[in-house]
Length: 114
Length: 111
Image (cartoon, rainbow over all chains, first blue to last red; front, side):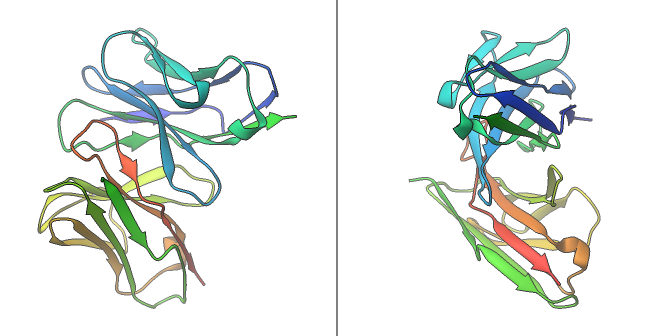
């Protein structure tokens, strides 16, 4: 069975500091991994994905994520946080078979403090 | 262009009333379609997915049902809403790729 864990419900970081939002996953075989962001009362916006290749994936708005197979992790990172990065972030996983179902974590609310 | 239309954007319904949420997609044919629900303070839960007309798979038992009457139309329904049906409902489609694109969502409040 596929599953995703986001161990932190809330992450607070000062503006200009680096940020990390954690994600670990469980899936049979090699995973597809995704990060999405949700602003208030909005749908989800795609940030980045890992399919294959380089373990460090760069995405939208300066975000990046590192795929670590041994630790089954896919943490989201940004070198310098902006107040506008404050939002709800979701990690998602799917296996490489089946009907493209994505399984989401419970989300992490990021607050960037000015 | 590839677009997901969802309506209505917000809905307030009394307990016991019926529900119909509609999702249509453009820019693709024979897509996989998904309904997700986001309850307040919770993550996203996959409710239903469909790989073709008339084909519906349910991920969790619940008070809701889904139908796919046309290739690019996906409908979420209920005969009698419960308070616990409140949430933010999202339609999604991969448009043939690995990642999912989401509609703008429907905020449902059951009172």
